[in-house]
Length: 394
Image (cartoon, rainbow, N blue to C red; front, side):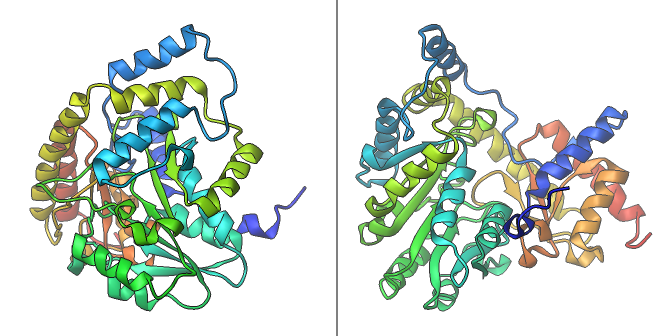
């Protein structure tokens, strides 16, 4: 039997998919499982986007495209980012990739190596740490704290940067917490980064269009002083309910774009043509489906936060972005992962234990409210009964 090389033994995974697999198995066995674990919209991709892909296939778009993506899509992305952030975006610096993960894979692979350090949010998307470890670099967690509204602290982040730091990963609006970092904190971070010109920044803004109550999303693209070392991560999965289409994009500084193009050529060649044409329709077509989806998420956000705060020994801050709630379950007496497992196996409610997002996630669960209001209400009822009737260790 062939053993994997040592680097592969350092790769982790995204436990949301393991929970999804277990929830699916329970459902196949007859259990009525409500899945609040997986982070994907429960809405259909807008009809005009689907039709654009079908038309592209009928029109003969069946071949390879440039590794960087077709120019009309890159132009549409540049125009959309300019409209949303005010930043001038050159289409020649836009890379089309098969999903947002590919951008972080490329960036961390470029900048991570033994002896280097990479900062990442904790709790945060688990692939950050997984890929950092894969490269041999040292993962340095940036604590994301409830008392800060789950925004990152500029002072705390800057204090972690040292001579070995190669990359800082930031995420706002954030997975798993729903936190949105305010402008003042981001401005302080950008100002402090002037003292660290050797450090690149990966800004994961995949949830950038998903904020509530008038909360502002501040894009790192809007700061020209760091644009020459900023990698912007974005995509269609969340905003346009296109998770399965695998359509992501990124904006690269001039010094790294060619390296990203080479990585594309050596790995996925290009994103499939029909999906790219669908992306043009998503960005340039009617935006009413997006507004309707966000209005539904907002209603569900209120429902889930009020319901969680009514549970015994549970508290939950109101998320300002994305579609996740991150309730504090410390006072229940349960370890977070044990509780998440018990809720799935005994109450048939799928959630994700906070430690799956990092060491600072202990004491929390992640719930996705990308589910119907009736499903959320039923899930909260099951959780209440479970917490009242079950005891830790039982």
